[in-house]
Each structure stands twice: as structure tokens, then as C-alpha cells.
Image (tube, helix red, strand yellow):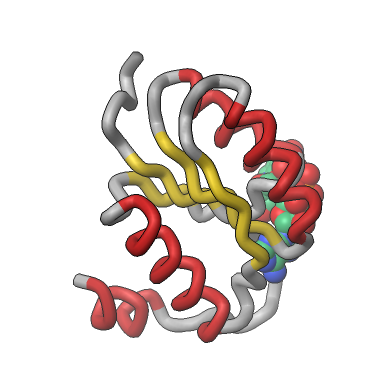
Amino acid sequence: MRLEGKVALITGAGTGIGRATAILFAEEGADVAAANLELPEAEETAEAIGETGRKAFAIAADISRPDEIYAMVDRAINEFGGVNILVNNAGLPAVPVPNAFEIKGKYI
Ligand SMILES: NC(=O)c1ccc[n+]([C@@H]2O[C@H](COP(=O)([O-])OP(=O)(O)OC[C@H]3O[C@@H](n4cnc5c(N)ncnc54)[C@H](O)[C@@H]3O)[C@@H](O)[C@H]2O)c1
């Protein structure tokens, strides 16, 4: 159990690499905030994590929208007390995303 006591926030956690990462991290002991563009897919991931005995919640978050990014991080902090691991898995080719320093300034 390499991630016991850790909290992971994973974007694009509804399918593919994001979902696989979410479930693997839970199997290694992490609680997981599963964020995804489509909520039902994230809910399926959170349900699968529940079967590992770890805590998880699903949240709809479009990573091209700063308000949804802030809501996603705020929810993870509120539910789990903080975030130890961020997996920035969802990708957006050629679409401007919020400046990393703006995100850092709000939380760190
Ligand atoms: N699979 C590969 O071979 C490969 C190779 C290189 C890079 N990547 C990158 O790795 C990441 C995951 O790949 P994958 O194959 O698991 O893709 P996937 O399409 O199976 O999963 C991507 C997930 O991200 C979600 N998503 C899409 N746009 C989003 C947005 N704006 N906000 C939040 N969530 C969003 C989708 O709903 C989906 O659940 C992607 O960024 C992809 O570009 C994948």
C-alpha cells in the first residue's frame, strides 16, 4: 500500500488512463476525487473505487473552465482535507487553459 493516507485528485477520471489510474491509486490506499467532463463516467469510477474500500467522490469538471477547476479543488479540500497528488490527465489540444500560476496563487 504505497499511497495509504494520501488523497489524489484526478482529472479525466471517467475513462481510459484516468480511470485506470484512479482505481490503481485506490488499490494502493489513496482516497480519490474523480473529476471528469461527463459526471456519469466519473460516478462509475467512484463506484469502482468504493469496492476497494477507499473513499471517492465524483465531480463534473471541465478543465477548460477556471470556475469548474476551482470548484473541483475546493470540493476535494472540503471532503478530504487537502490534496496530496494531482493527476492532470485530461488534455485539451490547442485550447487555452488557466495559467498554472493563477491556480497556484489561489491554493498555495
Ligand atoms: N491513450 C493514449 O495512447 C494517449 C497517448 C498520449 C496522450 N494521451 C493523453 O492522455 C490523456 C488520457 O488519455 P485516454 O486515452 O485515457 O483518453 P480517454 O478519451 O479514454 O479519456 C479522457 C477522459 O477525459 C475526459 N475529458 C475530456 N475532456 C475533458 C475536459 N475538458 N475536462 C475534463 N475531463 C475531460 C473525458 O470525458 C474522458 O473521460 C488524454 O489527455 C490524452 O490526450 C493518451
